[in-house]
Image (cartoon, rainbow, N blue to C red; front, top):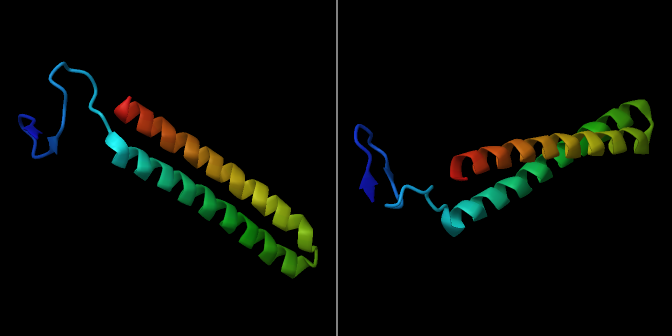
Length: 90
């Protein structure tokens, strides 16, 4: 580990100045966060749509709307997550 001057953080860097390698752990964390994000947003959308459908008596309509809204929100979240990951680790 190399200590950066003026900081308390330790990191592994390369001596040639190129970006540090994230390794397998970084990618596993990214993929697991992507899966959880898409699962949670989609299920939340379906659950909200089902709740609305129970109140209005239109069972398949708002479940589908909730699914699409949840999947869309998950896609936007995944886009932002990957963008941050790539900006940080190049």
